[in-house]
Length: 426
Image (cartoon, rainbow, N blue to C red; front, side, top):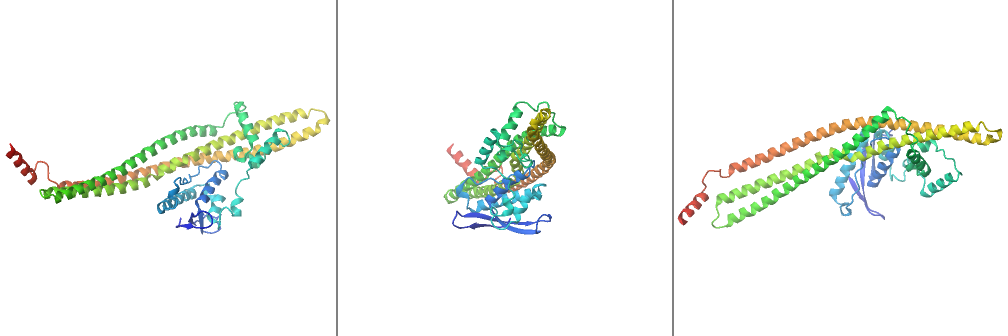
């Protein structure tokens, strides 16, 4: 990502970021493109991708700034730019997101993203609250067919604001309508993996908490070394200005102050680098909610499939019974046959979507674990190397200081004079 820019105008000033893309993917119209995007555009992208890529473990977007006073500071703008660049790089490395139409439009569409026709047409149709309420009432009074369309069953009921379908699926589950429907081996395996992911999330949370605490302690130690250096420097200044002060003591205090300042600066630099090295741990901790959402989304899609199967079985039974009735019931038979046909198409679409999410969950879970292992191992190697280098630098400073100080067991001029004074008093 390129430099950011402050955009004034009639509305509140905002920061925009230059996003330059170089790619060889065939679905891009050009191998190089550049656009400017606001932070809210990144929010729109992160909100849209899960609606289009069900079952994918998408990277976590950087959080919004909760401290209003920091928004326009240079340090904050650079920090956000780096985090957004890291977010885009993770999306570009994601197997599904990299080839998604949403990311392509985000990176290629000129001008205001929200006003782009290509961007607007990507958003799934969602009922307004009034439309959702009207639809529920019409369904309850029988003025609307209850069979969802194929385009609806590939979206979560809550996302579509289909209240009747959401309640219907939940009621079927609570009644235990599916307790005799065996789960496939892959589904059982993924549900076991979901429990493991929850445990991994807890372990990541603890590890990140401890790592951040350790880094804060290192920062505090660096600050204390700096404060101690200032105190020793003041003491050396006093000792040097005092008529009876000892030159050796003044020099020793000054050398100690310099050593402490050097070690404090090195510790501050090392803790800053350590914070950057710990980024993979933060990234994997941040992606956990998205992973859990994708895994639970697949389970919800299976609930839709099983509900449609149950509804289809019930309608087929009613159709078979109606076909045995007199010819006067032909209209009812035709209506039931139409509903059965609609349910068959919708059930097939829902099952195909479930299979897509199942495959994505399996592939991305394996990929996530592999990348996590590699990134965390690399992080540990970098952290150990950094700490070892820091300890060696500090050891060299302390060793040099030790060599410049009077060694234990040796009588300095001050010590000899003090001993004579004590002897005279006795």
